[in-house]
Length: 418
Length: 215
Image 1: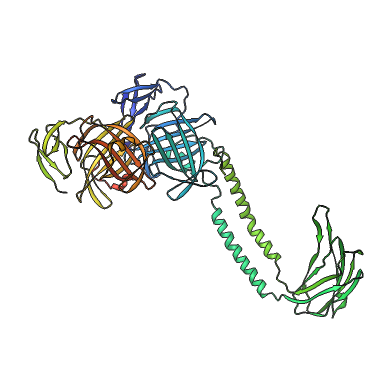
Image 2: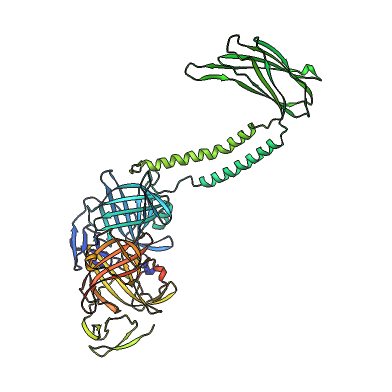
């Protein structure tokens, strides 16, 4: 664009005499000489005076200062670059000042390879009185305090609309609601809130033509979660789980679920035999559930049963179960007082079951065993298997999301107040 | 907008006034500033304004909240740590408002009645709460400023080097309050209050903007 390449107005550096460009004419107050890096400010009468003759450290601006870029559908001229330090926690971050004569100023902040596009706001956030970390509410969203500390100006290049010099230190607080962020800077004579939103580094690289991007070593404070499908996944899971439950309910309702017999067999003498009445399996695919229970305490009951098809006694089959409950010596108990047996797909016809019982021969052993048979009980197992399979991926996804959030907050220096 | 013609008391040149609120105007012919106090009189000399990058100019028009406005004057202010510009806009329905351009922010503010005394004004500090036009505000900053000069017609005295104290305040709703100490046309000390909003440049739908090289 030909119109872009206007030659900027310049003035002579009061330290080395080199030309210093002025882009935001009549707005910038602080200028840095591109040659000797001296910081020059306008005094109260509009004259340029030297503030810092040299800067002891030097950093490279990733954005070419003076150049105009298109970002977010708007043209922005990069006019200032500032590196600020938190000396107590020994880290630093970069801030680029972007200018557009119509739209004003924006700040592009790069911290640990993560980028946030910020702007000054005079809409003051509301403090929220809650336990945990301090929170503020702004434009209908709740922001949680993530960082609080000092910010010392360590290095500057370009021009700024405020007075800045190396060593200026103010208090900074960051509040996050990823991908959004609020930042509060407090000095003696000003309270300044800026609001911003996380920008993907690929977009920054493309829009600002940066060759080598700084590496990201961890999740950014206001970086959106990598698990952004979580809400959708939870919704889909809930929907499918509901359908599964409804299907199961239908099965329960249509299952025959008839009690064939329910009998307490008493055997006070340590041994006993019992034969159920004859019962009918109505069709070829009938299922039978057999429930056994005895109130054993520090004793056992041994049950040998035989399921006898009355029309084909050779096909009789036996089962064996033991019910026992013993104190583990630590106040708890081991064992089971009940057992359930499931006989699927029994052939049509009349049946009976014979029991041969034996119990531990000592006091406290139960005198009776309760047996009950249920025809075509509703089966729960397939339901639980399906639900587990359905839940496995969402659960892992959710755990990974929690882990990531935990990692995010590991780099916060804000203490949780209870 | 009804305009009226004024004959410059300094040189007799014609000056078109666009706002009934105007009490201060620059004569383009004799470079005198004129003040209305019962009658138009020569007040002082026009100060040449230093160059600046701003998209507005006297004559820019636009619409704000469906009301047509025209920029009819401005004054350029300087405080210890920067500059700002106050543009005076005359609305089609007769009232006027200030459009302030400061540190890349745009504000619109309408004059409101205030009963604040000079003492109360001087006692305000950063983060003090203050009430105006039925709204609650918190002070953002306090600046001692001086006027560098003006252009066009204005409803206040805006002579070069006149010093004033300016206090900006805002609230959780994005409302804007500007309090200012100064003098009225009779030379009496007073506190003026202006209430409005922080707005985006695009909200004004400006036309006839100044051409900015490279933009």
